[in-house]
Figure 1 (cartoon, rainbow, N blue to C red):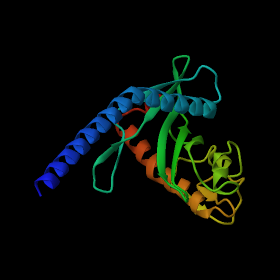
Figure 2 (cartoon, one colour):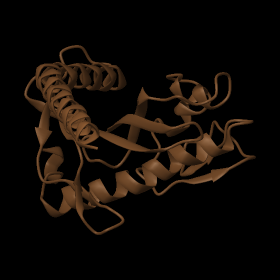
Figure 3 (tube, rainbow, N blue to C red):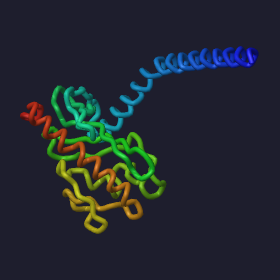
Figure 4 (cartoon, helix red, strand yellow):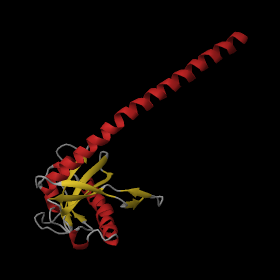
Length: 208
């Protein structure tokens, strides 16, 4: 009996020490890689946003204090950036995310200087079905092009309509209604809420 207890204590001690060391290793690894991961994410954001504005030399300045409310009523910060070219504000870019058919969808969305029209969007994260839902990733494709020049929102999805009409009605991708609806839901959650807060803060006065 005593031997069994000693064996249990010895093995438990080894397990506790091993768990502590493993946790410490994970913490050190995370601390080492986190800045690089954040920088890579920022680089991807800037690259996608710059492509949406299509003007070489565009830079992006972060805007603080923009948030959404979570399901529990807690504020969730939103990454919003002012697009600058030659000292002038030429628009805004923000990160937006939601759940798609096959997992999370994360977008970079661009709007004009008055935050009245959408210039388009790019995808940071998308694991939707190849050949169907992943068509949202095609810049200037059937789906994304419908947002270019459209009012900030809210948007509505339809299965039949004119995709060439630039308005608040978005025609779904055939065979990918869930993904199409997910993107519409992302826009409806973020765009108008951001616009409202930016107006309240006076950030849209004279396009500044």
